[in-house]
Amino acid sequence: MATRAQKTAKCPYLYSLIGERKKFNDSELPTLRDCLQYGLLLRERSVRNLQVRELCEQIALKVKSIWRSANPRIPLVTDKYAIDKLVHEWNSAKSLSRPKANKAAKEKFISKFDRLFDIAKCKCDILPCISSNCDGCETSAHVICTCNRENKIPTVELLFLSAQRNKDGEKSSMQIGNVDIKESKCQLKRLVRKEKEAESKKLKTVEEANKSNHSDISQDSTNVNTGWKGGVIKILEDKLGKKLIWLICALHTNELPLRHLMIELDGPTISDNKFCGNIGKLISKVTKLPVADHIPTVEVHGQLLKLSSDVKNSLSNDQRYLYEITWGICTGEFPDNLKDREIGPHSHARWLNLASRLCRLWCSQHGLCSEDQHNLKLLVQFVVGVYAPMWFEIKMKSKWTDGPYHVLKQLELVQKQTEKVKDIVIPYVKSSAWYAHSEMILQAMICSHEKAERVFAVKKILEIRGDSDVGNTSVRPRKTPRMNEDAKKLSELISWETNVYEPVLTCPLSKTQINTFRDNPMIVPDFPVHGQSIERVVKEVTRASQQVYGAEKRDGFIRATLAHRELLPSCESKKDMFSIVQ
Image (cartoon, rainbow, N blue to C red):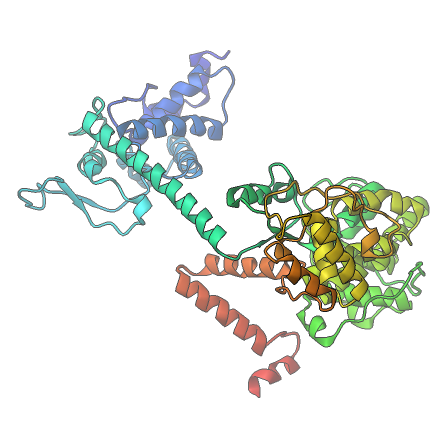
C-alpha cells in the first residue's frame, strides 16, 4: 500500500490548490472544495490507485446521501450527471494547479471553490422573504419555478436551500439538524397516500380493461414477452383474469432460423454487427466486391412470390433490395440497378440486411473456397428458398388468421432443404411457431373459405366445451405444442388429444352461433400478423421526440414528415423534383 507521502508526491500541486484532505461536514451540504478534499482522502485511504471516474463515483454517492439526509423529497440530478460533473471539476483542478496554468482561468475556478456543489434538478432562483420585504409569510422564501412538477423543490426547503446556495465557505446560516418529526410525519402520510393512489390506479386500469372489448396483444417473440410462466403477456393475462390473443410478430420469428443457421455454419457473433467466421468477415464489405461474370446456380424449389404493386410500394429500400436480388439469383441474371446500390448496415437485432448481404456475396468475386464456399451456398439456398419467400408471403398475406398457414408453408419449404440445414433450423421453427397453438389454428380454420376446415373447427370447439354453452376465457398455460413436420394441412399440424383450447373470439358465442360457421366463415377484426407498422410508428415518435417538445409539436412534426415523403418519395436525381414542380 502506498504511503501518504508517495501519493502526495504524484500530484503535489493539487494539494496546494485544494487544501488538506478531510471528511464531509454532515450538517452542511458540501461545497466544491469539500468534494475535492474528500476525494483526496479517499485516494489516500485506497489500497490501489483509483482512477478519476472511480473516485468521483464514490464522492457522488456520499454527496447524494448528505443531500437526502437534508430532505429526500428534493429532486436530484442523475448519478451519471453528478459523476460527469465531478470528473470535469477534478480534471480542471488538476490542470489549473500547475504553476504554468492560465491565471485568469485559475482565479475563475477558485471563485467557485467555496460555493455549493449543487445537484438539485431545479436551478431556479430562490428569493427569501427578508430580501423581498414580504411580511407575514409562512413559507419564508419564494421561487418563480418553471420546472416540471416532479422537479420542483419542496416549499419547506426553499429557505434552507437558499442559505446553502448563498454561502461562501464551509458554513451557512442554516444547517442540517436533527430529524424534523412534523415534516417526517407529513412525508410518511404523503408516501402512504401515493401508494394508495397508485394501487387504485392499477385496479381502475384492470377494471377498464375487463369492461372493454380488448382481447389481443401484439409483441415480438423474445422470451421476456412470451415466457409461459413469467412473460409480459402471461403477467398481463393474470392481471386481467382472462386469456388474450397472442399476436406474435411473424417477421421476427422468420428471422430466428436464419440467425441460428448462420451461427452454426460460420461461427458465433463477436459484436453488435460482426461475426468471427470467414463468411461473416466479408459481410460488411460485400458492396465493394466486384460482381461475378456468372452467378452460380443454387437449388431453388418453387418460385418467389410475385408481389402486387401496392405491396411493392410499401416495402422499404432494404426489403426491395432483398426482393430484387433473390429474383436475380433465381433467374441467374444480376440486376443492373443493384450493382452500385448500398445495402443497409447489418444488426444482430434485425437479419433482413444479412440475407441481402449473403445474396450479394454469392453474386460477387468473394474468393471463398472449399468448406466456406459450401456453407455460403447452404445459406443462400436457405435465404432464396425459405427466408425470402416467407418474408414476402407474410407481407402479402398479413392477416393474423393467415399465421397458421405461414407455419405450415415454412415447414414445407424447410423440408426441401438439405439434411444438414434441416437438422439445424427445424428445432427453431418449432419453438417459434406461436401461430401453431390450438387457439390460433381453430380460429384460422373457422374463418377459412374451405368448408371442410370450418366443419373440423366447429366440431373441435364443441368437443372442448362439452356441456357448457359458452367457452372458457380463463388463463391457460400458453405453451407451443409439438408439431408434425410432415403435415400437409392445418388439421394435421398438431395433436388434438390434449392441451387443446378454444379461440378467444368464439368463447362468448353460444353453441347455436358456433354451428352457423359450418356454412359461412366467421368474420373477425383484421389484426396484423406482424408488428412492422408498430415498429415504424415507434421509430417516428422517437425521432420526433428528439427534435421537438410537446404532444402537439410532435404530432405536427410527424404529419409534416409523412406529407414530405408523399410529395417527394425519393430524391436521387433531378427528375425526382418534377413532382414538386407539378
